[in-house]
Length: 204
Image (cartoon, rainbow, N blue to C red; front, side, top):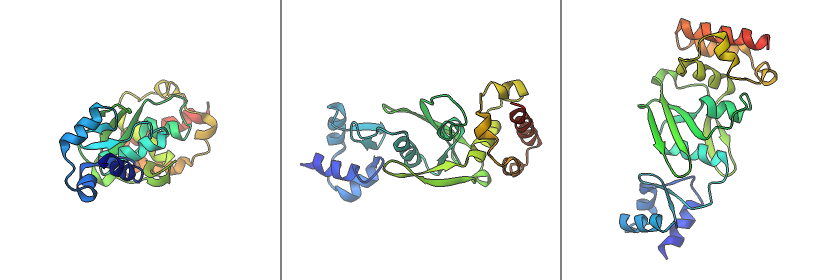
């Protein structure tokens, strides 16, 4: 049965693309995938991307899926800050940065959000091993810089206090590393925001 073939393939990948299917299951028709999706045997995460039901049960699975849906990208901003426990909020979407245009993918699993940056700013991430698969994620310092760079509504010391950063975890980070990353963007206003945040957290 072809569904069994699909299940075997799906166990090896965070999300199965049409390209994966065509290379390993030639002849499987799009109509068959649509029928399986309608009957709940598989889930279409985004057009041309599929997973098995009940197999994506860990946030790191979602991070791995995010990296395959839209490349190149790495998990950052609130998703990374929550992962590192720098912010207390439970994040219901996966937010990444990418070098392509900004995109939002609403799926049955969660909402995948991609924020665009220039290619020269694609740095400060690392590969991590999740429950089942690897994924790319910003370092905690890079996630802080991304938040201040892409969230223009955060500007004052009061705005930064409202983020509710965990001061103990934040102050374990290297402030010079955060500043160095910000300076690579060559935006004086960003460096200024980072300096304000560092001072706020020192006094928290």
